[in-house]
Length: 441
Image (cartoon, rainbow, N blue to C red):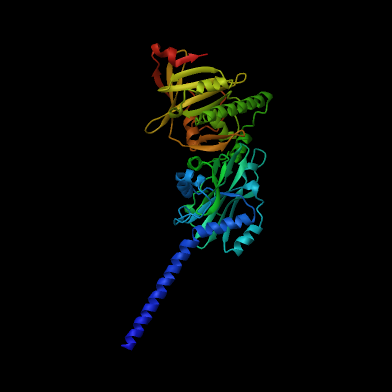
């Protein structure tokens, strides 16, 4: 009996020890992988006076639902851990490059605190241009790992178009691809472009953190933030075959076209109308990173669903009189505004069908209608003539649809009714509609 009791006691002790060990393991994994790691990271960056702000989309999504309560809540202890305690692999923060000198002391301190860290670098695209393709590398991302949780620190840089940019996360060959589950990162698969956010200091789960003042706006930006660089290497190769026009007329036209594009962007952005570089302006960006000097106009595209009746009066108020209006909102709408001298702004409205997208054209003297077909596309950001502006993400397919497989060869004689690769006849406007669909000023 005594022997049996001893075995039972030993078994109970073993079971208790196992349960306690499992509890410690779960506690260690859960506690250290969440709020505790974030707290230690915030302490680390605070000790080095590095201003970071939270951009984690999962946490910001939760915060956005409670934003009014969070803004008005006192700084006292929270009754529950609501935001930083859900099981996750990462928590994502942002750092503006110019606010920190990348002091190596930070990493020494991080190692003393138990963090492992990884720095991801790549070349600085801001230094690229027609005269120089710089190989200088800059830090783009940092990963700080403690136990099974990691902090992803995304480095943002200011671009000349007055916006913030982050680069892609590309691992070098020698880097440990198992350091963290990189595929689960929310930032880094593609470069991204953002407006400079206004920040708000809040208390979340008893942690003081800075967040974008309007989390929902930031999350909306994030979903459409993909950025494409101008292809300077290809542009240089193009100009080796076809030397650039450096005449006084070309220089003057590019100057006026840049000014017109900036004014158009300001006007449409103030209206909240999304637009992109289209036709020859898009070709100039993609092929030669500049305005095509013999194009004589600036071309923009707008989805018809984004049309607003305020567009015409807004441009007129900005000093750009309406030159012509063809078509109607339901079909083939096209607007043209007169810029400085003979430089005009053409705005084409695009209509979406099941398997393609198209914009229309109208011949004033005959009432003939034309249709230009494009494969479906999405929009990305780019930087063009010191402006943050949209272009089709699928730029090659977009350009090829319009200009055909020989799009790399300059064409100075262009007939909009027959030259485009994607043009189709689309009937004739009824004569009784001409007064409404063919308006020339």
